[in-house]
Length: 593
Image (cartoon, rainbow, N blue to C red; front, side, top):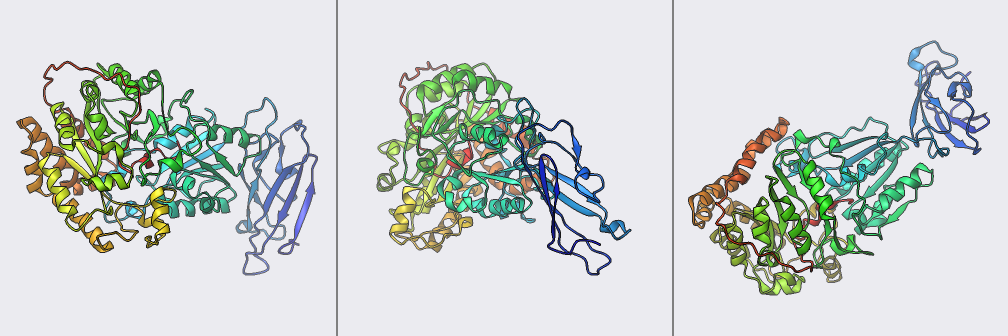
């Protein structure tokens, strides 16, 4: 007879205790499906003298995975057992044998099956439309963490922005990178795997800002950058004693292993050659995640120039994109990096500030090294707004002169602006768009001011009772999640969308192109701005067909169309101070690392 539901039995063994619990899942007494939850715990520290099949210890079990004291941590073994009093194969049992933690013996390898996931927003998986911005860059932070794993470990990276996440697999360890707008999806994935007995790790900007919230959905959480905490966790995990929380305190990129680019599905991204050679920034704008994420250590640091150049040299093709918050942040590092890149034949894009664009020599040297497009955080045309939000690096800077310097060196401008600051009235949208078009800005990125948890702005808004929702899905810089000072929430959202529509009308694209002094600059402006926003249906089609990489030559062709070198002498700055301050919403690029 089969054991009654809820009955448990213990089978002795020299080094294991195996507990088998049962539950009746059948509709009749003759045909039952029993689910055995088998939990194994090591009782001795001596290494078993032989490998043993689990059928030796559990009666009536058929074939199953081989076990020993040095099997992989948290590995699931699928066992099949015949129901004792039936002959039907439909009564086979699927038994999940969880061995977590099993301590590895000295000198014996422990191989781990690791799954790394970047969850996506709902809109990214919509059957109607796929914005190109979500297919630009691979999850570089996860690929960097993967570099710390042993070569024998089985590791995969799944980016839900470009592929479906498998939920029927059986990894030992799941690592999920959490942004605020993907938090709910990340938590659902984490809960799914924890129910299956998998050890789940959560890290990233949102986890660092709200650790108590994240800890409800994880076995281990990581606060801050992961260069020091991730290796420490791996050591603890392999030893069978992973901690529930790891907090970063040591800030260095020395001895950083090569990024596991072999795990990146290059064909699914327009810009697979993304790279990060620094972390953070030295400024403290009140709307930025940076202070919370880098609390307890340095807020800005770089790789060695040699390591950065070696990573660049490993990248195939011509085009690359620096995802650093501010590539000019350390003038000495930037100068040496750009000097080392001269002659590589690269075309690249990056982000910097108005202040450093105006510094003599850096832009010229960067352009010689292949810089063709720069993301610049102008944020607002209001001095009062700059002062209120601590954007001191923009105060007193000539925005128009910064754009002229970039254009004179053949560098296109992607201008960032934030709407909804306290000095913004109903006319801020039209004024900003008109100014950007008149300056010949090729592309613009607009944001609604968003008080992220963990920021000074969030605390100030919360204390003033101005927050209107804590639905993190709406904290995407496209929704008004607070009460503006001189606008209604609906006015702010409508103005935001109107600014995008107006800036990218063909009329304004052509008008902006006419601001360039030469025909080559005009044509490149029309091709870049028009190709980015006016051709979105084409991007959507390429993404769905999984052929977005086929459009990469077109991007490189536009970037390579630049003004001829005027032969100006480059005078590089010898300053060693750090500068930064890009868009408040772009520090999320770094994720766990």
